[in-house]
Image 1 (cartoon, rainbow, N blue to C red):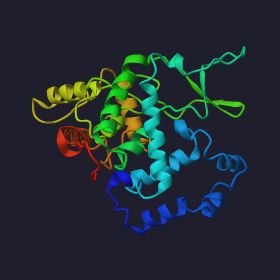
Image 2 (image 1 turned 90 degrees about the horizontal axis):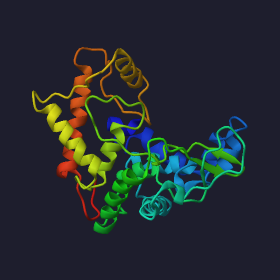
Image 3 (image 1 turned 120 degrees about the vertical axis):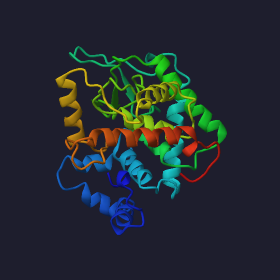
Image 4 (image 1 turned 90 degrees about the vertical axis):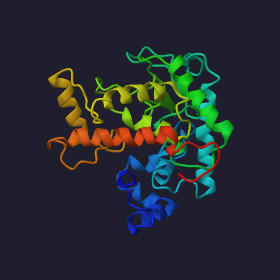
Length: 292
């Protein structure tokens, strides 16, 4: 969350945090306070290729705090993230990469192995907040992969990751279509944030959902420059405010301290819209390595 409030990474809280997560002894102590966390630490690299492990989170947090290009380990994770998106371009359907459990369990979902390359919210965020991987060909590949996700993925895709003898729901794997911004839509988790992160990749409007989001935003802003959500029901409105109350690492982040204050939601949404359009239209477009 600190990354969203512009706390500089030179601040002692952040610089000490970065040192701590790069210290194996400190991490081991941190993940030994209750018994279930001990195996989680011991298996912290299992599932790294699809972002379903502790180290994917640890690496991504460093990237969010603008320290994601600093070490060989982090640069290697960037390479892993790219391979996940490259792998998507090789698929014509998610069934090309999943296996089927030989089980009579009620919820016997298809699954991928722990070492399978597959993109997720962590790998997207890692690439959005780093620069070492950026070259014209890799930026182009990312745009093609994101477009391909929306061609081959289905809204009802269910997939698990097999780690050992267990099958886990993946951490926001990109196994369903990504959605463009629509002012009349209120989604739960993983909505406006990934759109901004896609824009941060430096691909401009080469991704179809970004192009559609721009058109929808420009239409919504055309009257008076203010972005509003058109709630279709009291339930949607209540859901939106509940999400704002619990906004965090996986939901849209709200900057207003009291979203029930008059115009607070409109201020927050309009700020997001201005930032998003700036990122898309050149504020962060890059074909070569450069500072974010």
